[in-house]
Image (cartoon, rainbow, N blue to C red):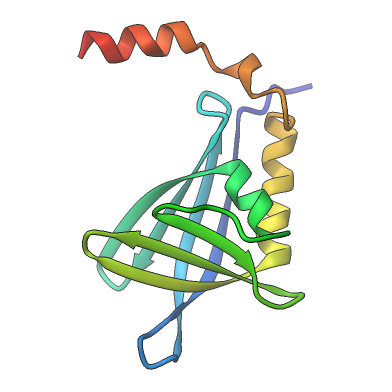
Length: 134
């Protein structure tokens, strides 16, 4: 048996332009046991690449009900689609995400670290020492 410590997926989200047109965007989702609360989302459009670090719980909750209250928000839109909103000093972006694809990715992360077992994979004291040393 192997010890799986990572999960990933390559998805296509629909960026909703200000005019309301959907534009496909390649998004790489990555999860690591060493950072068990976070999902890395790398958005690739043309020559640009932007990475956001998002709470795994926010993504899971957002498939069921409105989730997030800051820079990242996710909510159900239809039975098959969710709406992801990202806000920064540079602007606001809205994406449509296939709920089943996001759920499949989340399920793969649960194979790495089960929900509620994140503290088994995160050494808070070591992380605090690392941060204070900077």
